[in-house]
Structures are given as structure tokens and as C-alpha cells.
Image 1 (cartoon, rainbow, N blue to C red):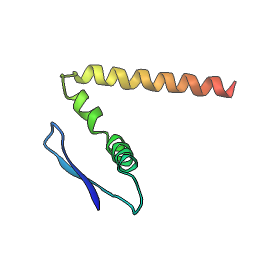
Image 2 (cartoon, helix red, strand yellow; image 1 turned 45 degrees about the vertical axis):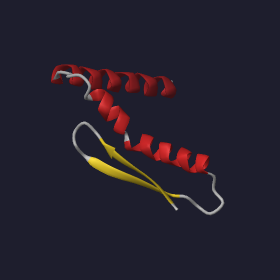
Image 3 (cartoon, helix red, strand yellow; image 1 turned 45 degrees about the horizontal axis):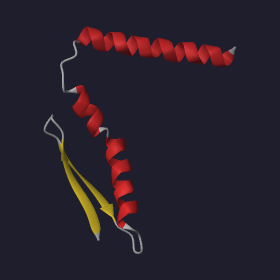
Length: 79
């Protein structure tokens, strides 16, 4: 038995998530595995990011801030 879901993001890319339901496995457990796989693909993150336009300058600024926070955290660990 298979548990399938067709996902089409805003960008038009289609992907099929197929979860094979093992013998004796409940549907709730299979649904949980499906949700985890769906989350790992990052589809919702991509959809949310495409809901509005973010200028390239803002994207670069966010990347730079994230790198600064990461570096600050790593420096604190070393101290």
C-alpha cells in the first residue's frame, strides 16, 4: 500500500512524495513520515518566500547578518 501526495509549488515544479505503508503500520504513523518528508523538501518555506518580492539587496543583507550571528556564536564557543 502506498501513501502518495502530489506537490506543486508556485514555481511550477511538481514532485511526488511516495510513502510505502509497511505491514502493520498505522495510517497515523505513515502520515507522520509523509509530513516529515514534506518538511525536509522545504516546499512550504519556498512558497512562503515567494509570496512577496524581496529585493536582492535585502537578501544579501539577511545573508550577511546570518553569517555575522553564526560567527559571533562560534567565537563565544571558543572563548
